[in-house]
Image (cartoon, rainbow, N blue to C red; front, side, top):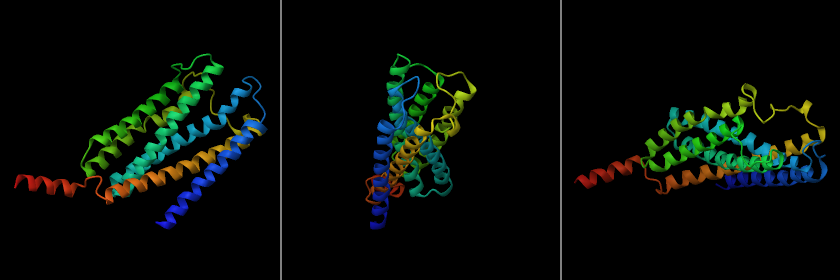
Length: 233
């Protein structure tokens, strides 16, 4: 327990440190964008949130498959944790994107293909967590959570590739060759910062879920069956 706490805390502190450094560079050192000016600096938190939200959803997808295969509680906890933290980052990227859109497009929201699929992604994974909250049996809850996560993941590659497949207000994904060198450093630093913070939050949330199961705050199938047998007697 002590080792896990130190590991979690170390990753979280590193993420906070990198976020401070990357944001400082992005706000005060990196050059402003030629056409968007200072408002472009929101990119240094918006893009890392987008990247890591999709990464966490991908991890949740992988954890869900392993959960279905092994039926072990730790993988169900990991699936739930990754989906929840991914949902938070998904919400942040939509809020940040709306602020950026208002400054550059003149509107808070547009039913652009990237915006629409990102909103659908948020609603799908929110649905996964809502479904989970309605299932009382731990075994069934893990199974339905895993299946729903796998189904919801279908939208994740769609969000990433939609700007290549359809016309969008968003530009196609950039590469280091097409981005100013002064902008690459804060973008990368903040991307790792959000990643480390996300890892810390996933580890803490998964540990909390396992702790709840261990302490009996989440009913296990055996307990439910035994209670049912007792009631019949």
